[in-house]
Image (cartoon, rainbow, N blue to C red; front, side):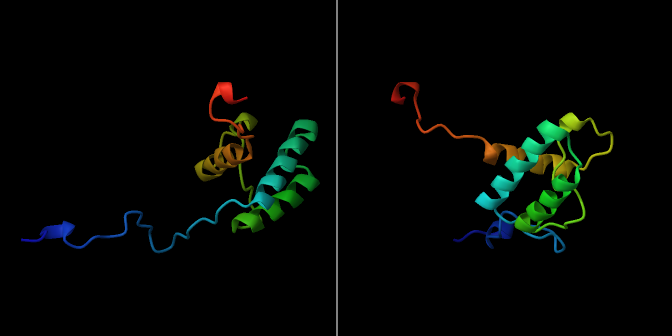
Length: 108
């Protein structure tokens, strides 16, 4: 006797609502742009003309709308931030971090 009920028909596990698009993977080009943006923030602060130009390029790499901030750093202290932008910030930070070339300490 086979499976019965809702388990009889396997479904796609990661279902998305009809209007939601699948995010693009983060490319090395996007990582380079993000690193330049972070360096600019450390030196001059966010929201300069150069920063917005890189923001448009980064949005193009990620397949997002170019008129809004792609990410928002929680350290900026914004009272009204978008949670998706903050999540995208942490994702980009993780991808941009240097990865160790060894697994264990003794492999140095």
